[in-house]
Structure formats: C-alpha cells, structure tokens
Length: 452
Image 1: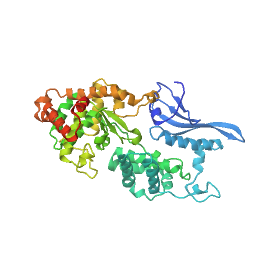
Image 2: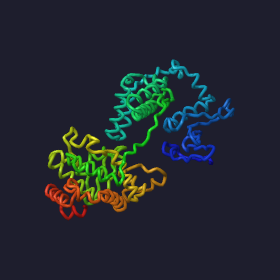
Image 3: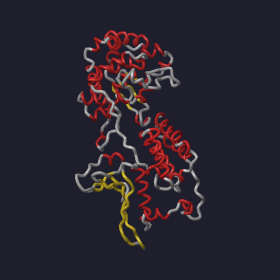
Image 4: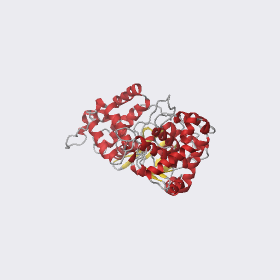
C-alpha cells in the first residue's frame, strides 16, 4: 500500500487497514517526522529527522518509539517531540538517552534552581482538579481514578514521580503483581491512570524523564465481555424480572434494556428530565461529562415503564420520588447499586446494554442508528456532519420503537399466560398505573396518551 497522511489519534490508528504484504507509513499531518509504520502484525510509532553538523545535513535517522498497542498516541507524540528536538541539535536520541545518568538529571540545565520533586499524591491532586473536575468528568469516572491511585498505588503516594520515571521495571513489576491479585482488567486500568497522571504532570515538570514508566508494562489482553441476550433468551429473563421484590428496581432494569443506556446515567434521571410532549428523557451527565449530554427518544413501552417507575416511587419513597425517577433508601436518594444476585436476575447492567445492541441488529436497525441511540461516539470524518437532534424527533424515535417492539414481541404468549408478567405488563395493569399516575401528577389524560 502507498503511504498516507492523516491526523494520528488512537481511533484513526485503530482504523488503519492492514496491508496484505509488506508495510506502509501513516504520516502525521500535525507533527512533521512523526508517523506509524503499519505492518501485517505490528504498528509502531516512529520518528525520522536529519542529523546536522555545522549547519549541514550529515545523515537521516529513524528511531522507533513504541508499539501502538502498548502506548497512547498522546504519549508517543510527546516522545516524538523530544526525539525530534534532540535530532535537530545533532544528537541521536538513543545515544543521548544512554548518556543521561539518573543522578545527573538536575545538572542538565546549568545555573538553574534544583528541580522540585513532585510526588504521586501531588500529581494526582493536580490532575483531579485541573483535568477531571474542570472538564466535567462524571463522579463514577473520578471514583474509578481515585480507587486506582489511593488503593492500588497506596504505597507510592509519597514517592517522587521522577523516581518511578527512572525505574520503569518497578512499574512493570507492579502491573504483574496487580494482575495476580486483582485481575488483568484492574491491572491495565490502574496503569492507564498512572500513565495519564504522569503525562499531565510532565507538562509542568520538565525535569521528569520523557519516557512514561507505564509504557514499560506488558499489557494484558482484554476481551469484550459477551454477555448479551438474544430474542430467545428474553422470555426467561422477563419471568425472572416480573417476580423481583422491588418494583422500582424492576422498572429500572427494564428501562436499561429498552434504552441501551449505561446504568450510571439512568440512576440520576429526574422527573424534570422527562418531556412527555417531545417524548424524550434528557441524560444530563452521561459518560464523558456534561458536554456529552443527550436526549433519549422514548418508545411507547419506555414511556409506560417510566410512568410505572414514578407511580411505584411515589408510593414507596414519596419524598425522594419528587426528585428522582428511580428513588431508593440510599444516601443519594436514588438507586445507587444496580447489581442483583445472579440467581435472582441473571442479566443486569451492561449485560442489558449489550442485549439492546443485539436486539437492534436482529430488528434491522443500522449500526449507525444504534450507536446514536446509545450515545456512542461515531468514528470517521463524515459522522461530524450528522446533526443528532435533527434525527431525534422522527427517525431515531421510530428506530427506538422498532427495538422496543422486538423486545416485547419476543415474549409471545407468556405476556398473557404468565401471571406475574400479566399483573405487571398486562393491559389492565397499564390502565391502573396510568390512572394512578394521572391522579398523582395532574397530567392531562389526552396529553399523556398522545405521548404513550
């Protein structure tokens, strides 16, 4: 294949085609001399520049930075800038790296003040305030980072970052130990957190070694958890859900399935977020923070689910139900823990998100539309020209209705034959729920049924 020029990011690199034979270069449009060598089995970040002596070109050098599967593009780009700067001064990056001694790092800049040692604790606090909070990251995301730092790296909190940067083997060993004690996903996740904190700290602490110590780990292979259900599995799952003790939790799990949303986003849904006229539920704080806020188009089945949740909530938690769609006896006032005993309910949480995607495909909904409904980021340049809210009123809502209809069609005769299901989702039960809802909320009957 011929060489190409693109803006190198983690996403664009992942989408690069694999050559049938040989290899090709994907050159960065932003940083000259920075590119990825794409082979059949490996993709490598690389830099190339001209070594000059006495102002004249002496030779051209090419230096590999690292495997794209083991380091982020941001880290590779930062390293590339360091290497290119050294090359422009007539120094080979590898040779310069070997000459630097750990004890001599502060002597690199003569007549300068000694470098202030920043600890992992200090770097984490700066990253938390200047990056996570300022950019509106969700509390769940922040909690995950905090768990990595304050639990996995507890014994390193007062360790200078430069000490870790000069000893990548120590970091690699920690990754191996965490893999054994907490599993491969936790080990990889904690190292991504360390890598992000280190990169952020280096922006204001140039004495830190340019190579991120987290790039030294041998990353564990991660596989997508394939736990979704197909049409044939829904009948048994609904039978389990129908006998769940708490009716608010029952509606929460059903709405998770019908919307394909992340449970963490639905936990904080408020009655004020529901617009019955437009038939939407506003998700104000999804994954990615407030800037990724979006509206879920509601099918008829989803509206009835929300009505039942509000009705049950008003009876069980009258005070908390004024603020939350899915109230609970928790510190927050809403459902805080979405897990169930697998013997009671076999699928919940992200299992239902995968099921939504599976049912959508079987129902003929396009991958693009399913991703829009699930608020996934859409790869590719053309996706940037799609205006989501313009599709919301008609197209996406009809696709949502198609998915909900497929879910309930899969129940077949069990919707009338199964007593628990009939009492929960049957027509008479829906009428009772609607009447209670109209009485307690004062919503106009005609307006409601126009929505439902």
